[in-house]
Length: 283
Image 1 (spheres, one colour):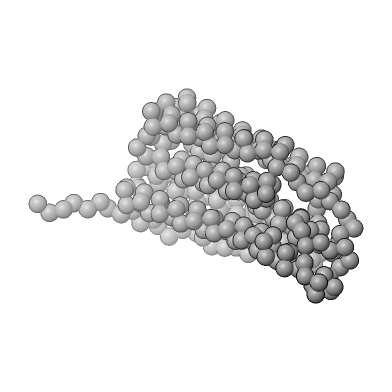
Image 2: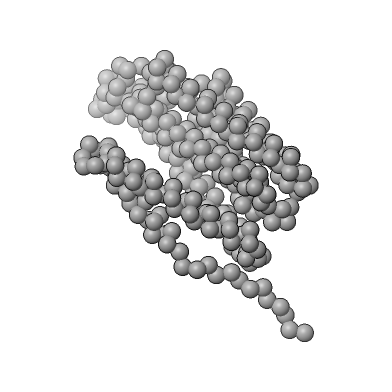
């Protein structure tokens, strides 16, 4: 008896990659022109952003239609899982680079500058201790503590991971009410997290004098927490799309990888925040 092989779906040529490339070119060029106050920077940036949104809606919509029409089999599902796994791995490396910078600065660079030879050529008032304000030492700032909004946000993200897992259980039990409610709660918790982070930034700027110019502490703080906030926003949008799809009747307990992919991403965001909370806020 000859083995049977599943037909592998091959999509038709798509116009969307060229739109995505054009969008990224415009966003990058527009940002550079905007920051340097040259040329029609804002116009180019927003043209790129609009093109990117069009590309995302069009391309993902095409993939959704192909999936819902039953064109994807086990082989395509496996390729999707590998792709999402490698994407999350690239995101891990992205944040690993930031954590590496923070480690180098705190453990190696700043202490090494405490020698008499280094202090003699640096700015007046320099202390080889973390956090350092950099050459603008006269602009004193208060470092962000771990207890308060950061701790509340940690609880919020941990709770969101639990509500998302609860939603997944609803998917596996074919309980659509539990699935919808779990997704809705997770999205709302993500929005609450971002609201608290915005308030934290306003408090840091207005009352703690903690700014991007506050030496290496300020730049690493906003770089790491800001990029994480961007990932929370992206993850919440992904889960909101999953909620809309669930409400439209998409997914079954045997065919729901798009939901799983969004859940993987959200749990990754949760884990990154836990590490970030310890090394940026607590230690």
